[in-house]
Image 1 (cartoon, rainbow, N blue to C red):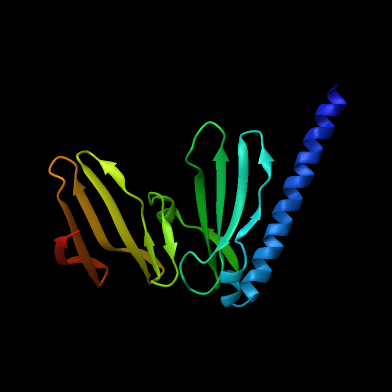
Image 2 (image 1 turned 30 degrees about the horizontal axis):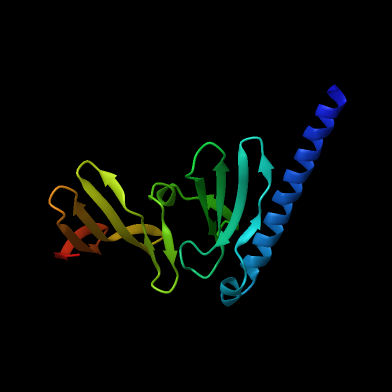
Length: 175
């Protein structure tokens, strides 16, 4: 009985090690490949099953610099929303670095054509909020914020400009 448990644990470790090894090889080859190839290939690298759900490694250009970055998605069986950890490829250090600012965004959607990241609608008190971000100097910058008042049903969108790392409201309009 004990040997079966040890055998199962060993097999799981070998599979996970193989997945991580294959992922790092694929990530390194993707970093050397051209960016146009990314659009034609499915980004999902693997989906190992763990005791708590599945883990997916997704290669995607998160900061629109032409190099593939890495998103690690853990789907937990008891919850509907997966946990995602984002890693940007650091060209100078030749390694992936965790980006917590992306992890703080609510349900981000990456738009490579516009080079923007849109968040899903989240509720904060009597408001529903959605935001659009862009990259500048390797940092996320808020470009637009939409606020829907749940009581009055009024929706306002505010656009922002960044000057010397300071956010300035540009214009406000109905959305």
